[in-house]
Length: 113
Length: 341
Image 1 (cartoon, each protein chain N blue to C red):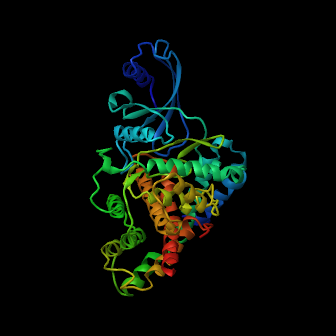
Image 2 (image 1 turned 90 degrees about the vertical axis):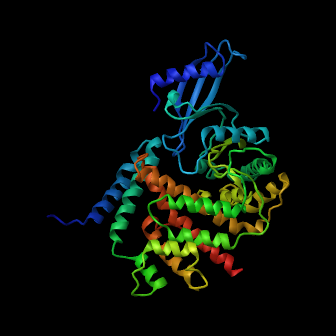
Image 3 (image 1 turned 120 degrees about the vertical axis):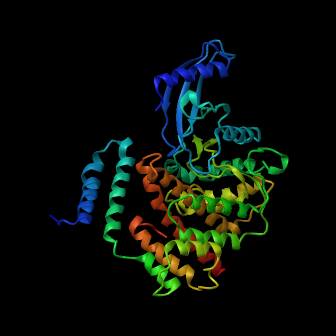
């Protein structure tokens, strides 16, 4: 099976080609759609490249401890019920910010906070 | 998509509804904008009508499966009518059809307004420097009129009665919406719990528009001609609309113009207070902009679910939930700022 170029590289180069070679020639009323296509490909490429970066796992470890097998769904429940809160976890807000920044690096790395 | 057969049925329905036997549909063209709702430009000729005139209307058709939390079309019609009566600039509501045999889904007929609504075009217009403050004042004036409609007059009886605080009502709705989605969202849960715990003491109920932002009002030559898209209206705290309007996610990149990308926050609040019987403190903005970012997060997730569930395949809808981390970081940073004070 042919492995190279890697799928992430294929998506990245496809997105670059679209942006540089096609987008300038697209009629005005199709620009928005083309920009969305570029964006969708770029997000998929970044998400594939970041698949080994388990930021949700890190957040769960920080909140529940290294050897816990608590799930993402459980965290949602505990945050709703108040079982996990600022009182029980004083640095909770900072941990959530770190986790969201990892998401942003995939969805929109150019986003300005 | 509206078939020839449907157009014919629509013409028959319009003839009956407007009691005009020779009414003829001249054009029926889809209008841009609206990721979920469909808007059509409808031009008719009614030679024997009361005013023997040509009319330019907008037909607003519900999608086959509407966005969660959307009002029924007849209720949306009633809300627009009460706003119209209260002096809010809105398209005049002319008729509503719930009979799905006509066009496959319920629809409204509204008067057509001149101007543009595209948020990006308005916020990034080269004349915004000159006209932004006046535009913001007009929008704030319209908002004050919306908020003059209150639940204690027995109006709009189809909206759920109010028996909790406005914040509890909204957090309850958002949690119910989250429960209808396949994935869980811990950051949103954290923020909802935070909103509940820090709710302000001076809440009151009025009609809130629910999607009040640049992009949902029509502007013609720097005059606001109408407030659009009422399907998320509900009883709520008036500051929900102010916070949503100013939330960072609705500034179209013009971050320094906090009020919808068109003016400074202070200008908007001052104009609102001048036009309203409410007095809203600009210093309380953070709480309500967090609430605003939360509202858009929920809309974005629900829109994405329309795509992933197969109800309406669309690239735009597919990309919308990918905006949610942007709202999440805005909300968390605002909470941090709030806690430092």
